[in-house]
Length: 131
Image 1 (cartoon, rainbow, N blue to C red):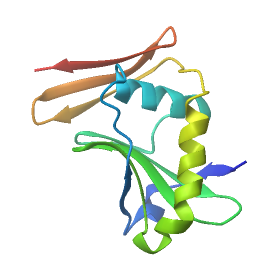
Image 2 (image 1 turned 180 degrees about the vertical axis):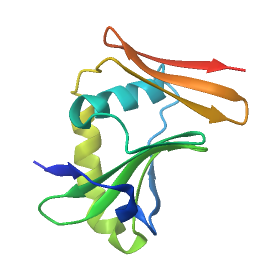
Image 3 (image 1 turned 30 degrees about the vertical axis):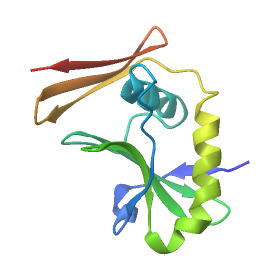
Image 4 (image 1 turned 90 degrees about the vertical axis):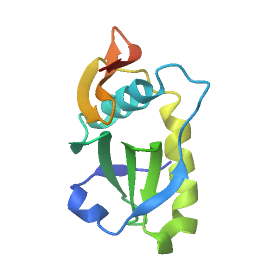
């Protein structure tokens, strides 16, 4: 089993998107993703234009990856040279998230189309788009 530590975003410098995490069939997919990670690691490191970011370091390998929401949706990122080594770590983390119960939380972020509020209330994830 992987053991991750949430670390400062400064360690995510020079990372790129490695794996798309969008699921068009999942209702309220941003709030779902956020509330499950929040259950394990608390609020995101940063709330950005069009999303949020978490940065993690695997305690065994020392490898760093990000879990984030950005302009293109949900994704995992890392350094390109670490892509192959990160694949199983990210896959295990993503699989583990599916077993985590969403916790109550909320953040808001600006987008080109207005404000988006995401999170969970009473364990039920939501994505609310306001103009």
